[in-house]
Image (cartoon, rainbow, N blue to C red; front, side, top):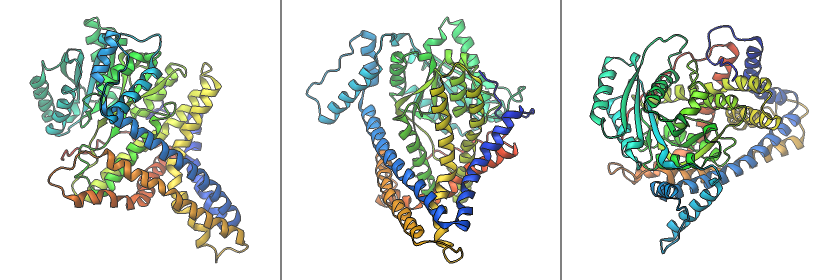
Length: 538
């Protein structure tokens, strides 16, 4: 594995720093090119925008198709009794039967059979040998938020004797947090095979103030515990949750099912569907749109597992964590970075397997709309910090000779493409496309062809908003039942809120991403994890 450089304060190697500066500049070079060409040659600028818009339009069609496909998989997965399917693997009776059942359930069973045929191989293991461990990362969140997540884990449709819960809390969270965690650990002790609180000491050498140090400390404690109990690390699947995360009741059963059937399973990671729906009905309209957009991005990638990355809540075996040396305790964004650490540790033999059941999380909430928007921007800025993985990845693929050239090119392209699109697409289409029209009376030599092409660009943008109809439909389908205190007026607002999408894409998508690129250029990356306020309400 290449040495982690993310977040280090020591002088970085020369080529690493050069890669960071070049990568940080690329989005600004592209956006500047549109502006400069609009002044120098409107024909060229509009032609560039036309090509960009056509490519974007084609992508939108693909995104809509995959979003609907993922939504279908999610709905079918929710209809499957994964504990029953897991038991059938234990007994060896894996044939799917179709009795006289409702058509929806029959379709879900047919979907399951396809998933089984796709996953079934020669090296499946007995799921009864597996243990599920959940590390719940806590900083200083309210007791009701933490306890709600603990109850959600305990309510899992899974053998409780094979389920371990480690509540990983920070010493820097304060004495009140420690009191709450110990109280909760004692209250729920005996409900599972193991319920234990593990305190992460403050100011350990080489660590930044972030989640990675906390969960690494807890995972190492878990390693010691399993070693004492003679539990093989390859038989322990570890899910990392934030304090507000609530896994679907059947999540652990589907995870065990997927892990038991996976080829080369310790070289695999597992990503459930992230849904920000715990408090979605009480969240403000801009936050609801951002929450849905985030889920949509991962839903689309879940149909393309080779493009899928780790985000927020995810799972790896304890053996995998040992092999990759747990997490990079100097990283602010540990989830996406963990994908690349695993990829390089196994010399390219690593991929993420989608888990179609969700882990539900809180949407951002603050003290009033302005405070909420500021908190949301900070969270998105933290996520955008993942762009610093790109120089790390490029340096890694150049160094590791055991990774195939095809794998290097595909993964490098997808990483660069994702973060370039994140930084530039909303601005290029939402602002840049209008520049030639705005400058038409100030720049000489513009041709009729240029403005005909420009009209085509605008038409393509309008047509592409058909994709928005798909997004609205899926967002409604993902909503939990409306609380009684809200009327149909709130349901209507769930539709009308999508009028905010263009502004959100510019200010809350491109904005944080470009700031992250500026920080990368200046070598001033985030040094501390700013935890998002958790205010759980229905």
